[in-house]
Amino acid sequence: MIRSVRRVFIYVSIFVLILILKRQLSTTDQMKQPVVVIGSGLAGLTTSNRLISKFKIPVVLLDKAASIGGNSIKASSGINGAQTDTQQKLKIMDTHELFLEDTVHSAKGRGIPLLMDKLTKESTSAVKWLQTEFNLKLDLLAQLGGHSAPRTHRSSGKLPPGFEIVQALSKKLKDISSKDSSLMKIMLNSEVVDIELNNDGHVTGVIYLDENGSRKILKSHNVVFCSGGFGFSKEMLREFSPDLIHLPTTNGKQTTGDGQKILSKLGAELIDMDQVQVHPTGFIDPNDRENNWKFLAAEALRGLGGILLHPTTGRRFTNELNTRDAVTMDIQSKCPRSDNRALLVMSEKVYDKYTNNINFYMSKNLVKKVPIRDLIQNYDLQTTEPDLVNELKNYSDVDTKDKFDRSLIINSFDGNISPETSVYVGEITPVVHFTMGGVKINENSQVIMKNSESVLSKGLYAVGEVSGGVHGANRLGGSSLLECVVFGKIAAENIAKLY
Ligand code: FAD
Ligand code: SIN
Image 1 (spheres, protein in one colour):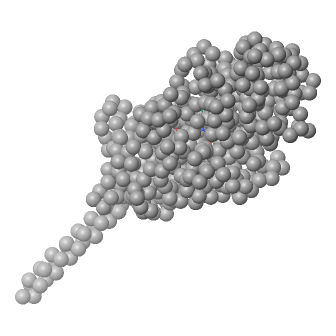
Image 2: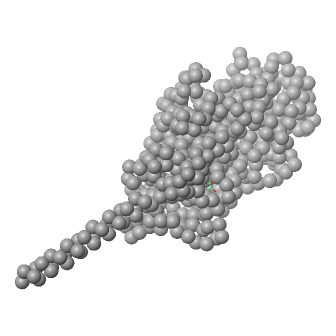
Image 3: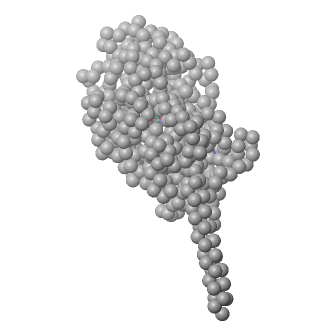
């Protein structure tokens, strides 16, 4: 009898031991699994850097493209921040409340106010993080459309902001990866096609096609989608914003809404998908007018003083610093419908403030330096030299109220200009630029389930343009790079808490 009790006791003990061991093994296994970050634009680079540098949590960064940077690398105007050191140094009065007010006003009742609050409040620390962790100067400011203060930061020096920021953040990851590939691994040419969930709905892996097109799986319990918008996909535009499929775009060919499609199939809520931003100024290349892809004429060109002229009358027709949707509407309704374009004209002073960028546009033949007189002939304007000169002089007269209520008139044309005075000019047309809609997230950047306020899966996050709700019906220039940094940091913090 005693013997059999002892035997049962031994069996039960072994069973319990096995259970404990199994549980421990699976916890260790889980602990060891890296976070998978999908997309190497600024959202992915921020999330990865934060996870590794602050929390020492291992990351695998996947991108379907052959190079790092997504659309982020092309950003040309800069990143927003209120109450930053740079603003303080340049004596710019600004507050989080004012930035929030501008953001909510631009959003026109769409989007999620809580996310807008986070975006604006965290903007000071986001800019500071880039300045201190990556030694980025971000010492210059521009005031873009819809903003009440100059708050779009870029660095003095030769590099455009997107390129500079992506270069700095990716260098850090590459350095870490070369020292310790178990902490950081970057896999390019790797296209994510699905997510594996277990029966409890928890993320267990990421399915992707490797560079040879073979289907592979990466085991992970934390996945962050940073896969960008859908502005390049005519198929998605046809579904969500069919009026825009005829417009060209500034987006790279990788911008096809893969994250939105994969997550929606898994049960994620999509929000504001019909809200697609048309940027008023894509450059028309005079040697390739019909190309669907356009170089962006950065909003900073207008923020720093550029104006728009009607392509027939040579007169101004809009407040160039209104929000993007309003400027686009004016181009589409006031300029001839047939070619949907206007002229962007800048003074020598704008050139002095934005020299490297304008030199780049000139090297691509998108901007030309010409005497005012030649504008009439080159662009077939139906006006006279004195009228055109007067139009530029009237705009520059800061003592008279602007006829379109433009609030910021800087770097304008001198009072003594004549037909011989040179200006910088390019032809522009509205372009599909950004998709405000996307996967609905909460304030921790976790993906929200369809028709519910609950998270879809504890370890599933979306950051950057793939997510929706941060900008409502219209994004303010400079707020996309900001969104990547703010919510990338937030996602990393949250993963670290639950890891
Ligand atoms: P992205 O930078 O687009 O990166 C997404 C990445 O995900 C890409 O590398 C892509 O290859 C990868 N990916 C997609 N699908 C998959 C998949 N299935 N598997 C693996 N990888 C995948 N915003 C500002 O705030 N300021 C600016 O000055 C500014 N200028 C801009 C200028 C231009 C020309 C453009 C096009 C945009 C500009 N924007 C600007 C907007 C801003 O750059 C983007 O909205 C923002 O950078 C998006 O960042 P992201 O990291 O979310 O996505
Ligand atoms: C631009 O430079 O006009 C783009 C800025 C942005 O999209 O935020």
